[in-house]
Image (cartoon, rainbow, N blue to C red; front, side, top):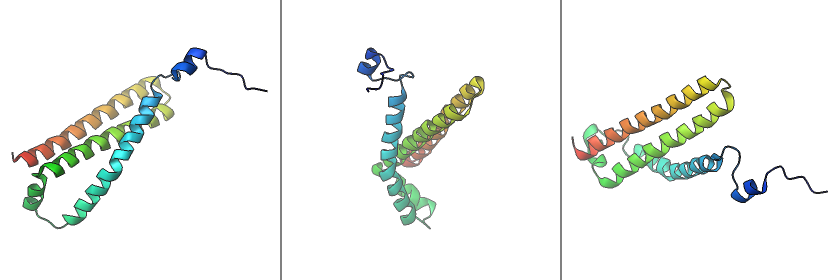
Length: 129
């Protein structure tokens, strides 16, 4: 006996669930996680190599284009991935609608502020201001 289909033909053809955005969220989490693997490994290696270095050596290193770009990419991927993960936790476990909405706004704004602050610091060091 075949199982009954609970989705409409249009829904099956389009391939979207009721939220209409789950696939994009899921994919964004996976893409940022994949981007974070090499970026985080690179960062750990760099931190080990620069351990004990003074500020002048670090600033000289950040002034090269590749490290500055990688640091900016690491900041963007980290805070975006973190915001996506916290969004899932908040949506799954916070039942109060108003509190959920407020927490989602706080998380998104915090991620933007912290990422922007980090990017500003990298640019300030790399451009020599």
